[in-house]
Image (cartoon, rainbow, N blue to C red):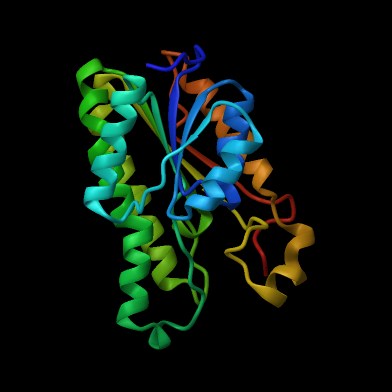
Length: 239
């Protein structure tokens, strides 16, 4: 087993770019051991080459076999998964009636099914040792309705509520489940002119990473659980 810092082993999914990459980098700076997963292996290798304590393990988190294989590899290599930080997700902003079944299925896979699979992979060992943290990077769209976000917002709300129920199921077993609902953030999920127009008032991925790191530090205190946190830009949601 590799030498690990005392802060523990964290599996960060969706870590190839944007918020996920920023969280992986920040946690490694804090001397967590970070296992970074995403589909784009070349970006994971680049991330791992930029800072110590990041170990790239490519994974399509919507593929049951891939998730099982990677989670097993982490347990074999490091002995435990102390925390799952799930950043996998995708967004689509368009009128409901123009959304195709294929687009709906893609959003469902990215925003709900991947979370389900990763939870099933990490929870048995956490339950056995009565310790662990689940940190889900959600969206303010899970809490507030936005036009042209009916599918995205609905699926984010479903995922967040699944975790709320799971929190009640697992809190007596020492497992902490946290939703971090993030407002508009300057990442590639925003395309072209829209991103250029509003970038000046968006959060940066590093803001979210700093907050995620602070939440993980809080979960180390046995008496408290930061259940839900909303992180918005100072000027609020985009108009």
